[in-house]
Length: 88
Image (cartoon, rainbow, N blue to C red; front, side, top):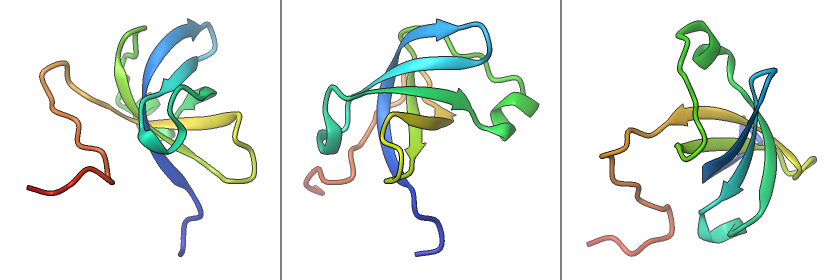
């Protein structure tokens, strides 16, 4: 595998001043785990705003399970499909 990252879905619990956020994981792999995440570079460039309550996609490495990077913000009307949910 080229990129050794774990992709999870979470919800923003708290926002800190330096584009850092506390995220609670919703994905079944690490349910209710909390991470400290920063915005990915692309999200900074395109000035994507993240607020508490937003659902986001987070990347984390297996080496440090307390920190991550926010790579995507879901729209409020967008349905989220978890990777291990049964396909219909």
